[in-house]
Amino acid sequence: MFSPAIQKLIEERSGSFLIPASKIAFVEESNPLYHAFLILTKVKYAKIPVLNQQSQLVGLVSLAMITDKMLDNDDISVEALSKYQVKDVMQTDFPKVNFTDAELETQLHLLVDNNFIPIVDDDDVFQGMITRREWFKAFNYLAHTFDDHYMVIKKNQILRLEANDE
Amino acid sequence: MFSPAIQKLIEERSGSFLIPASKIAFVEESNPLYHAFLILTKVKYAKIPVLNQQSQLVGLVSLAMITDKMLDNDDISVEALSKYQVKDVMQTDFPKVNFTDAELETQLHLLVDNNFIPIVDDDDVFQGMITRREWFKAFNYLAHTFDDHYMVIKKNQILRLEANDE
Image (cartoon, rainbow over all chains, first blue to last red; front, side):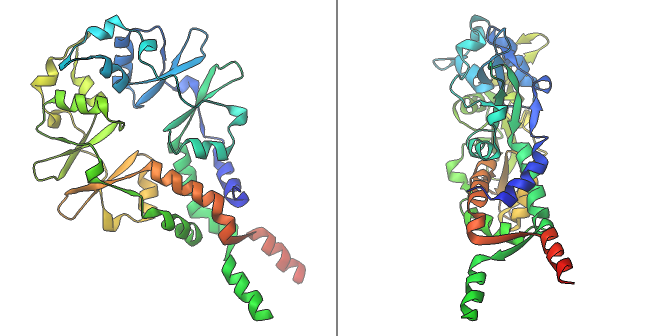
C-alpha cells in the first residue's frame, strides 16, 4: 500500500506537476524531419510530443530517432531530412495517461522507466506532461519536512515495548 | 533536516544507485563529431560522458550539441561532423561528485536539475553515474513499504492529545 502520510505530503506539491501543453514544444506528424531536427536541436527536452492535425497525441520523437534515419551504410547524409516525415520515425508505443487517472502511485510507477508522462484528455488531445523533475522537487520537500509533520516510531521498537509490558 | 526514517529506507536501496563506468557508453574529447553522432544515435542515453586519454571526466555531450554545429544559416550540413571534435561542442559546466561525498541529500538535490550525476574519484577519473531511474525505484520502495517499518502519527494529533490531558 502507498503510505498515506507520504501520499499526503506529495499531494501538497502535486498541483504543479502538470506542465501545460502551451509551454511544451511539439511537432506535427506530417512535418518533414528537418523541421523536427531544428526544434530538437534548440529545445532542452530530449524527446518531444508529436501531434496530428486534431492536436491528438500520436507519438514521441527524439533526435536519435531522426539521426538514425540519416545513417546510410557507413555514411551520414542529410537527404533523409527532407525525404521523410516525423511519422516515419516517431515512437508510437509509449504510456500516456488521462489526467483524471493520473494517480500519484501510477505516476511514480511510470516514471521509473520514462523521463516524463504525456497527459491526454478523453479524446486523446494533448494536455501537457508530468516530469521527473517536478517529482524530485516534491521528494526534496518530503524528505526535508516529513519529521515536521509526523512523529515516526520504528515498529520493532513498539513490539519491544509491548514485550516489556508483559 | 533530512528525515532519518526516509534516509534509512532509501539507504537500503542505495547500494545499487551507482551504475559503473564499465556499463556506460562514452566518447573521448578528441573523437571527431561523427563518432559521437553514431554512438549517441545508438545508445539509450540522451547525454553521455566525455573522457580524456587519462579516463578523466572532462565533459558531457548530447546529440543536440552536435546537431547545433551542423546548422549553417538555414542549411543543415554534415561537414561539421568531420571538421570538429567532441571537445569543440561538449558541455564543460556540470556537477560531478566524488563518490565518498555523494550523500543521499546531495544526490536528491542535484537530481532535480540533472538526469544523472557523474561520479569521479580523487583524480577526476570517471567511475560511473547515479541516475534518476534508480532513485525512482527507491522512491517506489519507500512509498510502498514505509508503513510496514514505521508507525506514523500526525504531530497536531499529538498536540491535541496533550491538550486533552491538561
